[in-house]
Length: 281
Ligand code: AMP
Ligand code: MN
Ligand code: MN
Ligand code: MN
Image (tube, rainbow, N blue to C red; front, side):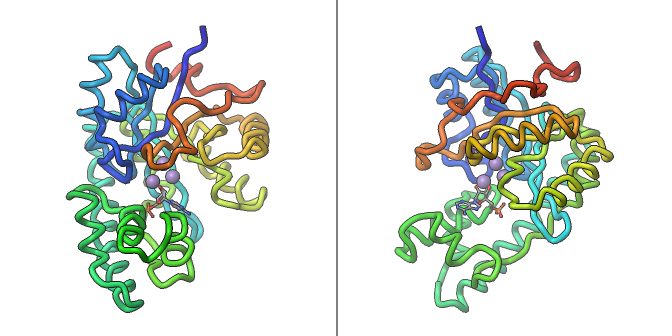
C-alpha cells in the first residue's frame, strides 16, 4: 500500500485558518498518513499538532517555511523534520517575526494613505497575536468590501507596484539553510514554479541552495499545474535534488487545494521520504 504524504501545510500559527489540532484531524480524515506542518516563520503550532497526531496515529513531521530574500525576490524554503527547540533556529525565526511586525505596521500606513483605514488593526485581530501575513490583510480587506476575494486583494493592493506592497526583510538563503540544517532538518525549495524565474535563474538558485546544504525541490505543490510538476520533476532529477510533495493547504476556504489529494511524484524522482535522512520509513 502506498503511504499518503503531505509535506506542506499551514495552521492558525501563521496564515492557515484551522488550529493545529483541527488541521491534523482533517488531514487524517482525508487519508494523509504523514503530514508536515510548515507554518511561515514559526514553529508555534507544532506542539498542538503533535498531541493530536499521536492520538490519531498520524505521523507528524515538524516543519517550517522560512521566508528568504534572494536577489530581490522572495523565496520560500521548507525545513522538514526540524527540532523546534533548536537554539539557532528559534532566534532566527524570532528575527523574521519582528520583521513581520514592522512590515505589518508599514502595510497599514501605506493602505491608510490609499484610503483604507484600520487595516493594521484589522489584520492583527485576524492573526490573533500570531504571525501577521499579507493573507490576514487580504482577508480583512475582503471583509470590509474592498475586493471580492483574497486573490483580488493581492492583485490590487499587496503585490509589487501596488499601494500596500512592502518588501519583507527576510533571511538570506545562507541563514535559512544554516538554521534548518542546525535544527537537524532537510531543506526543500517550496513551490519552485511560483517564482516565475527563468530556467537559468532557477538553476542558479538551486546551485547556491545545494552548495549551502539544501537537498530537495517541492515538485508537487497545490499551486503547481501538471506542466509545472513535469518540469520541476525533470529539474530535480537533472540537478540531483530529492523531490517533495505538499499541498500548501491553508484551510477549507480555498476548496481548490485539499490535504493529501495531489498528483503523485513523476516517475524517476527520488522522494525525500526515501532518503536515509528521513525519520521513519
Ligand atoms: P507573506 O509571507 O506575509 O508575504 O504572505 C505570503 C502568503 O500570502 C503566501 O504564503 C500565500 O498564503 C498568500 N498569497 C501570496 N500570493 C497570493 C495570491 N496571489 N493570492 C492569494 N494568496 C496569496
Ligand atoms: Mn501562506
Ligand atoms: Mn510559500
Ligand atoms: Mn506555504
